[in-house]
Image 1 (tube, rainbow, N blue to C red):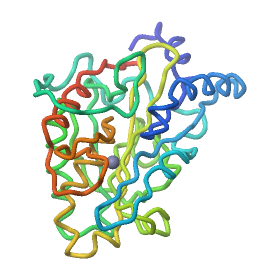
Image 2 (image 1 turned 120 degrees about the vertical axis):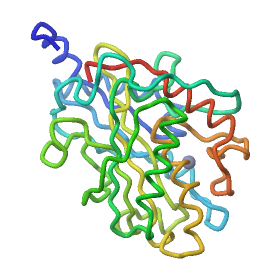
Image 3 (image 1 turned 90 degrees about the vertical axis):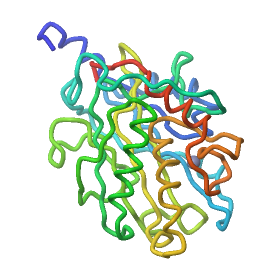
Length: 296
Ligand SMILES: [Zn+2]
């Protein structure tokens, strides 16, 4: 990045944070963007931090709780006006080759100008795991699930290690003291209902990412999180579901929404013993073909 690019980068950093939630994102992205622009002006350069957390999950043994949480929204994730230096963890071209995929039903959480909002295929995307409260062997399971999502998307996604960061509703997307001058890695953590009250009402996990809509260039996800119900997963009877839940939540993290086809892991009905289906693979492959976003 040359010094001459600095004014453009400064403009791009006055960014808006897009809503990353399923139903609300589908129905109201246009409205949210308009509101974001207005509030952005009022804040004179501060970012509008809207929702960052993704989706509520329910399993067949849990109560239904979807729509209320999906529509409620919350503020958080990015507060203040700091961002990492542009292009951290990025290179000039995509890191892994694009993926060819079959066709099948899939949906995207957010769109921007007719294309899905994606992570940059030019960035090395780290995932960190907080093993506190996790079932034995869970870090390995996360590592395998992340590798499968990387293979299916062609995004450079990899578990880089463990962390002691706990999931928070208002997680900061830039934590230089903990992770250095780059976007915070994608977090996978376990939590109880004290931290995530929805776990008392049918959820077993959430997954989602936060997108930035820069003044110049394409919107892009910059970081995300998966949080899983530590008490539910503490029951050995539920632990076989961990891979399915992780693949589903990581699907949300990279931008997949639910579908009505129960042969896909993104089926809206929750846990059902599925693996990645042709529609999931088609959607994931497309999510790996987004633009590089060097200004972020
Ligand atoms: Zn879901």
